[in-house]
Length: 172
Length: 273
Image 1: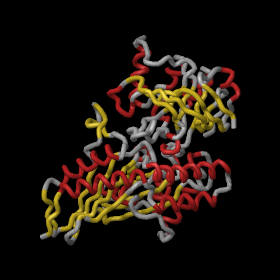
Image 2: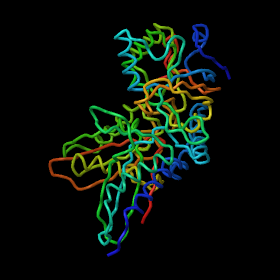
Image 3: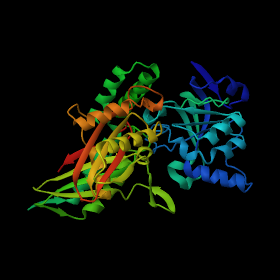
Image 4: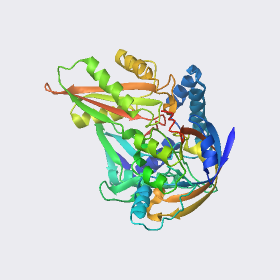
């Protein structure tokens, strides 16, 4: 199976077609509802973001607490459509990919095409299985958000399916 | 009158929270395995395979099946000949917090629905029922919110027919589509009041998935699966693993129907003290 790496450049993104199964090795950033609210607010107020979005991947995930001797707890994807209102803004700011589960709105699909990005699905409801692909975890921002904080994860051969490609091909 | 110390209840709730989140219910696991055998499409088989592997890994490693360890719904059947020594509600809430911390589960509860604030482990939602006897039965159902968000209630006319009700239930699943982690288990509540129908729909999820179901449940199961939403919404025969309907008497002017959708990670655990 094809392995892709971060940072995710246009060359890699162009080759990804809807329905492709790929494995990701590299860095992903967890962010969901509240973190997105803050990121967009920062963009709108022209403030500095806690992460440089260019070429990066956001993973819609709020993991459980981390058990002893583990790198991360259960960490599957949350429902992407709740982030639809924020995604076009982040894509415009340079975000190259999102990982989640479920449908995206027509506006997000259009933004994915416009900004040459990609939306991946991963195994929904399989947080224990997905935790085995996470090799490092580092806190980045918004500690007060608890499970909704931004974490930087290094993943190895993390299983993905292309949900929406840069040509607006949509798996749903 | 038998006496039961609330500290024992606290311990039991803690243990049930961990058990429910780490060990997938055996009837759900069996239904998933059978569904995988029935699927022809590679993607559907692959997805169900991952779900089954996830359940096995979660149990082996003591990890939560899903990172959404839910908002625990606690069902308490309190014997009328039982005296609880201590505060039952406090014991339950403390038990949840202890279990969720010990099990490395997730703090997913915000104290204020509007202001939100920092996420914690409590308070949970508790439903009490008085029964005959000297026992206390506790059931913990950690309800994930991806699927909870797709719940629906409709107040039908008392003269509406079963076809309309079936259409409503199927439409609820259609609307949820891929977004609430199919394959689903559907709880339906019919009757009572608006809120009671919703409670019935939630309680319906506690019933084991079996083949011994009513004609209406069978029909709904068949028609929902004909939607071909499939595992993860990527197509396939398995959109729904089971449908359970709970009913209750209702008002001559009403016919409340509630649908509570569960994702495939339907988790619950019980203990009788």
